[in-house]
Length: 229
Image 1 (cartoon, rainbow, N blue to C red):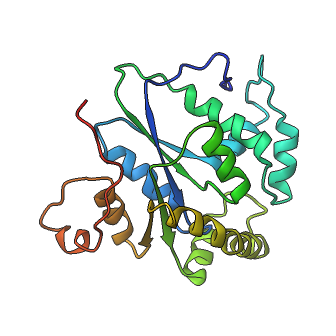
Image 2: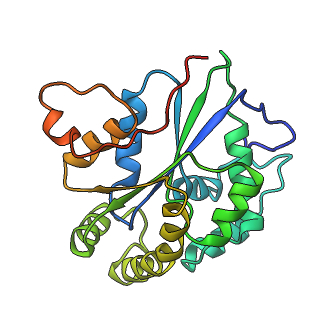
């Protein structure tokens, strides 16, 4: 796998950013993947920050010509610690900028699992850009834990690791929610399947059909407004 660099990346003509947040096990990746499949125009891309970092740590990944310290990333992931902004933000920028915009249309990135603290949130805004909308998936601790343990992506994904990640999420989200709520771009979504996916599609301006109208009426905000230019 070739790791994108900022020097070799193809800068899109324009992209919009949507952050999708929620506790571990809330279904962020699932709804983002489903949304990208359903959204045809403009192009939408999904970036799971956690999955991408794990991908970079793959021993079979190619790092030729790229200054990626996979050992440092692996240490942070193993210890369940957040990467500092000066390490994480260049990685995310390289990934975003590496996606070619063939027909020069507006592109929207759904970035799930980010930001996880204010340091990286502010660094992202300064280096890459400000999000148009921030979606926060609300999910009870019990439901999130059951889903997290049932998927168990890694051997270390046990109850203790969930508890630490969940507690860290709750602690850091207070400042993050206050920051984006003050800007009027934050939207809360309840994750009671299948309502969460329908709600997300509505917020991304997918036309409703008869079977979805009852749920869609609960959500009034739009994400993001698509220009005809």
